[in-house]
Amino acid sequence: MPASPTSPAAEAPDTSPLPAVDKALRALEVLSDAGPAGLPLGALAASLGLNKSSVHRTLAALAHRGYVDRAADGGYRLGSAALALGATWAPAEHLPALVHPALVALCEASEELVHLGVLVGSDVLYLDKVEPERPVRVWSAVGRRRPAARTALGRALLALGGGPVPDATPADDAAIARAREVGYAVEREENEPGIACVGVALLRAGAPVGAVSVTVPAERMSPDRPAELARLAHAVVPPLLPPGLALAGV
Image 1 (cartoon, rainbow, N blue to C red):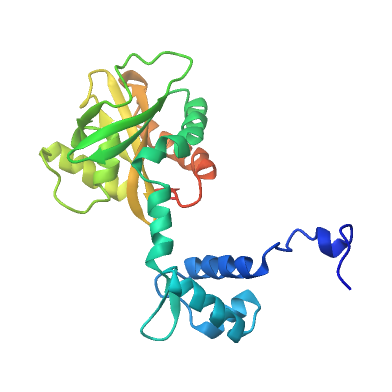
Image 2 (image 1 turned 120 degrees about the vertical axis):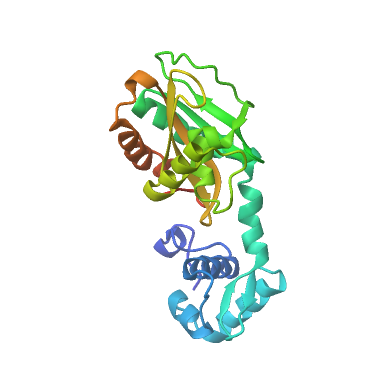
């Protein structure tokens, strides 16, 4: 007998209005967790609590649209269409809207100026900023570009790039190497007199797509302050990032 509109079965929060769609989405979630190695059909069916024939039909439909690939060993993994969704959902032009709540929270927690930036060639481009109530006397503007190797934002990103850094001095190279070692970058008056910054990279699928920095008057950047600000960023930012984005070092 069909469940009435007021029955517990009708009200169950885990009852999907379209079970076939729900099954496909659950399969994608499990394959995402499995990573590049994917899963064999039996293991995937067991994870979903479904029989193999039902899951096989779902995978065939997903493969038809490129959301699932069949691996050489017969297992299944996410396909290029699924990966492309993430790439189009969080490109650089979307980052300010996606990350702004995290910037606001980090600004409030640190009581310092916070920036968001991305690499554009050998420069870092400032996409967003949040200013504290107390003024920070630094010229800062969204749309500004600065040499990446001279900024904490750029150094945090270059540290994860792995290739040669254009126009970097030996001091820049040393700072980038240090950022690679500790998970955050520091810049002290190399970009602007009287100003110091700490930067941490933003990741999507393990690759750097942007960075967040905290800007501090140099007199307030004690030897221990960079590590403190990095720990604060790691505590405040990740819970406010949308799915698919992560902070380096977390």
